[in-house]
Image 1 (cartoon, rainbow, N blue to C red):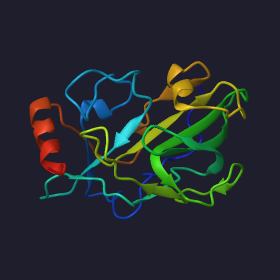
Image 2: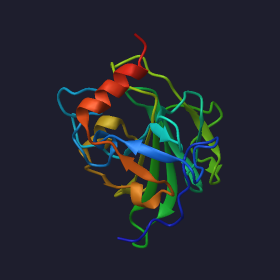
Image 3: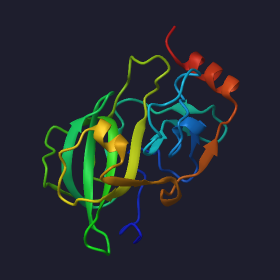
Image 4: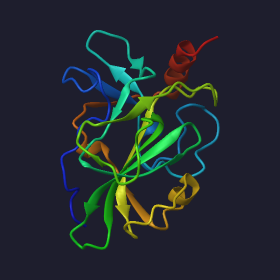
Length: 205
C-alpha cells in the first residue's frame, strides 16, 4: 500500500492544534475498537472506523470537551467528494487523489458536523479550508461534542453513493488508523469508572 500522499494537519480551528495541548482519548474513541465511550453498557454496532477528537488537555487545566461551533478544517488538500447524513449530523468526504496503483483513491471523512452551506461536490479545498463546524448533541446520553475523523482508501474510485451503514460494512473501503499521522499528543484515559464519573459531571443535570 502506498503512503498517504500528504502531511495531515489537525482538522480543528482555533488554538486546538497548539504544541502545548494534548487530546485525551477514552479507548472507545480510538480506531477499530468496539468499545463505547459515551455509555458503560453494550458495544458499538461495528468496529470504529476512525478517531473521535473530543477532549482537550492543556497544561495545568482539567481536560475540557471540544466546544460546539469550532471550525472543522480540511486536514489536507483535495476536493469535496460528497456530503451526506450521519446519525449525529452530517459527514464531509474529501478525496485526496489516487494511490500508487491508480485503482484506489485516498479519502478522509469528517463526521458529525454542521457543514459549510457552500460546499459542493467537486469543489477544490486547501489544507485548513473551513468545511463546517462542530456540533452539540442532545442524544444519546453521554455523547459529548466531538469530531469523528477517518482516513482510508476506496476500492472503486469516483463512486460516492455511500451511507454510513455501507461504509461500516467495509466492502468497498479500507480504513486506517489516522492517529500516527496526526501532529497531536495523545493521552489515553483507561479507567472506566473515573471516565464515566467525569462525563456525568460535564453533562447537564
